[in-house]
Length: 356
Image 1: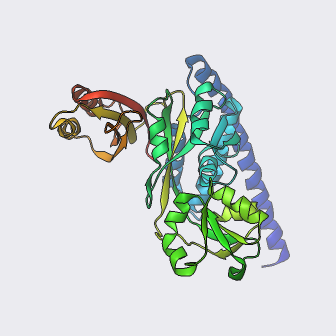
Image 2 (image 1 turned 90 degrees about the vertical axis):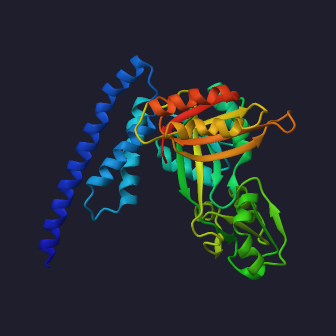
Image 3 (image 1 turned 180 degrees about the vertical axis):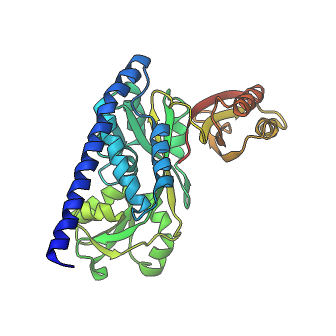
């Protein structure tokens, strides 16, 4: 191929780039009309069901060679920019920067939002309730270590609803300033990260003291300040805090995922392929839990999760957290929930949202 051929191809690329840019801007200009309609109808700017629908449709149409993860990244940013033209959202997450919750929030909302970390789950619920932030992102459960119990407990007393769920692959690296094993005198991380890497630590660092940190990102910060400390954190956190990789992918379970909830003050628009979450407690009588759950079986509603939690201040009293397939307005789901109520002392629907 000659240099003339190369230049001819580059001119075609330039023409295509200009066409792509023009079409993106034309797409963004349509957001003005959408913003007016949403504003008049008091519809939230963020519509996770519609946003997911766009990505799924384009993924089905994609014949390559564009990889699917790159497609999601590109169009996720286009959607984020379009959303910001309607209203630039303020989103908070469990910080500091580069926690897995931060990374989940970035993957869901894109970069055209204002994101700020808060140091506790209580703060996130409280500040979203107050309207300081439009939405918040919190961890819910991990496939290896199970539920984040404090997140579930906070749902008892909040008016917030679940607007979306985010499922994220979790991989951990062992990070330090030097990247050398011989320099490590202590290993620190969030308790969940330490637990998810317990087998590796027992094999490779059996005699090395371990310490808990408020988050994996806080552990990375500590390792950046002290050359004798190694942190268990994400590769992104290591890059952010200037750390070297001692060992990569050290989690014991190679299929390791964490689920996050997006919290807000208004429910999402109805979508197909939805999931609904609720909490309830049952009266003390033989068979009440059985009959409560039978309400869903009788209506053909599939339950995907049930978790029990003690009710604070009421010894030996429990509430149950439930995930089910379907939207709360779907006839089988709505009827099942009504069938549930007579068996319960308390029922609270936390939201219906697109499946992650």
